[in-house]
Each structure stands twice: as structure tokens, then as C-alpha cells.
Amino acid sequence: MKPTPLDELVGRTMGSPARPLSRAAIDTWQGAQLGRLIEYCRARSAFYRRRLAACPTAVRGLEDLAALPLTTGAELRAHGADMVCVSQDAVARIVSLHSSGTTGPAKRLWFTEADLERTLAFFHLGMGQMVEPGEQAAILLPGATPDSTGDLLARALERLGVASTILGLCPDPAQAARAVHTLRPAVLVGFPVQVLALARMAVHLGLEMAPVRSVLLCSDYIPGSLAHSVRELLGAEVFSHYGTVETGLGGAVDCAAHEGCHLRESDLLVEIIDPHTTRPVMDGTWGEIVCTTLTRTGMPLIRYRTGDRGRLLPGVCGCGSAIRRLDRVQGRIDQERTLARGGRLALAELDELLFALPGLLDCTAALVTANGRDRLHVRLTTVPGQAAVVRRSALDRLTRYPSLRELPVTVDLAPGTLIQPGKRTLEDHRENQRS
Image (cartoon, rainbow, N blue to C red; front, side):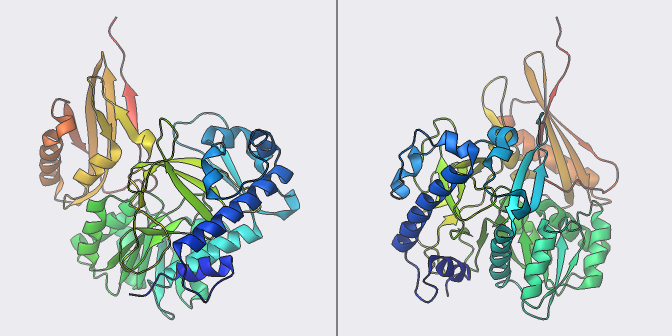
């Protein structure tokens, strides 16, 4: 198996496109680029000039990474404008992010044309392993705004000679299934839950999804049971992508070996830290994903805490590439709850259990707390005619799960088949307490 196309991107950025990449060469280049980034931010960013004042004047390499201060989402919301390193004339796009449940100002990210071009190059090479020139692509992502995720992806596919149709976020899986059936794309790109709901509704409606050959799941974490169901329903090869707006949209994508997502190491330096101690952990250990944007010019981020739970995989991928790999991300750390009577509950664990159920289109979960007691409330959206079976199966699975055995669980059904495309959350509800 030949190395991932991303080797070409990383090698070109490092100045050695023709030679096979070694881990030592990538580490050396990233260490030198980290030093250049620190000096760039000191000279141009008021925020980082203050934050880096107590750090060594020169960064020698990756061995100095852990000595640099972490950057948080709260700091990004409060001081984002002071992180910008270019004039407003050089800014091509500003993205505002309003996080669910967060009060105060939104996160704002500034990007130059050069920053966006690097994302385009990553999308172009990454998609090249999923689709051939002359084929069609269907994109179930927001794309009406210039330089949005769907728009950048469509432009990257155009460079491959692939025509794209941006369907946007489709809350109606039946409508989405009919649209894809009509388009007959070779590749389908979208949020994990949205693609699964589309595939299950297509089966219910008797719609043939061929010639869909490849599926790229992106923009949210991907439960293993969901990816398996999509693979079985569509008979397609399923690829995974990890990325956030903070990482510049493109972050990591898996190759044909499917042994983890190869990181965009030409632009991102990724580490995993213990979320409680903030100390770096060894490869293979789960923790919080932290990203440094090595080549971004508009608004670089140094050791940015993403809030996502992940781990770096040790060893070399089966494809032979030396580029580091991120294991399937397990959702957001803030989507884990400590239960009133001890133990923990994570949305990712619930999704792993439930999305394996045939007939399930979507589900929401809320942890309800009253008088020092918790109960879990789950609402299911199902394929027509399968609601009763899915509900019984869901209740059985949930009550047998170890951390839920002593937790009251209620499961009800949502009316209709509309889903809620977007990032998933575990809601918190607190009922009135007795005096």
C-alpha cells in the first residue's frame, strides 16, 4: 500500500517533496517551524506578546513545546482580536462560533487567503483518495457562504475535476435520500448522524444509493457503531475526518488502511494532554487534543485546547506513511457528566450503544437532576413503522449498561422523522428542588 497523498503536502511544505518522509525529519521541521511561529507571534500579536513574555527567548525545537502556555476557548472569546497578526486588509474571512450553553462573546477566527489556500490543498489531496475525475460528489454541509466548509470542499473537488452539489444541512432524511438518489454521486460527505439517517431512510423508501462508493464522515465525532452501520447500509468505503474551525477546518483524514486519521502536519502540531494536570501524555493514551497552527498567518493559535478527547496512535500506519495518526475522537470532554451517586456518563458512550440499533435515525439525551438524584431521558427519532421495536431495544441496552444500571432511564419517541443536524450535546436539566 502506498503512503497517503498527504505525504506530498507535508513534503512539499518541508521542501522535500520527492523524498520519503521520516518521522525524524518531520519532527525536526516542526520544531524549527514552532520557533519561527513563536517569534512571529511575539512580533505581531499583542496577546501572545504578553503570554510569551516569561518564556525562553528562543524555542529550540519540540522539546520546548510543553514549556509554552496553553490557550483556552475562553481566552479566544475574550482576546481574539489581540491574537490577530495581520492588518484587516489582509483578512479574507472571519468566522464567528457560538457554542451551545456558553454565554458571553462568540469565538472569532481570522483567516488570510494563504490560510484558506492551505485548507484547500489539504481537502484537494485528501479527497483524491475517495473520488475520481469526472465523478460527482454530494456535500451535506453548510456551503452558501463563501469560504464555508462546503464551499471550500466543493472548490477543492473542482481541482480534481469532480462536480459537486452542496445540499446543505438537511433535517429531513427522506428528502436528503431522494436528492442523493437523483444525483447519483460517487462520494457522499456529511455529518455522521445525517449520513446514517439518510442511509436508513433510503432503505425504508427502497431508494438505490449506488453508485455511492465512498463516504466521508466529518464535522462531529464518529461513533464506531455508526460508521459500521453506514458501511453496511451503503456498501461504501467509509473515511473519517477530524477538524475544527480553530484548526482551519482541515485537521486529519484517514487513508485506505483505515488505521487512524493522518494529521495535516504541514500546518498542525498536535499533542495530547491530561485535561486535569495539563501535562503531555504518551502516545496511545487518551486525553485532550491540543493544536498549534504552525503556518497560519492571520490568527495563529499556540497550544490551543480543543476540548476534544483523543489519542495519538503509536507506530507506523499500514500504508507506510510516517505522518502521525489520530485515533477516532471520542467526543468532547465537556459532554461527560459526573453522576450524583458516583460514576460518569459520556454522550459518546450512549451514541455507541444506540446508533447500532437498526431503524434509529437520531436521538437526544438529557441528564435530569432533582433532589440529589439523576435520571436519564432519551428521545428517539426512528424510521416509520419501527418506533416500538427501536424503543424496546434502546431501553434494554441502556438499562444493561454498567454505569446506568442504577440510574432511572426513560425513553420516548419524537414525532415525525426530522433530525437535528449539527454537533451533538448531552443536555443538563435541573428540576425544582424540594425544600
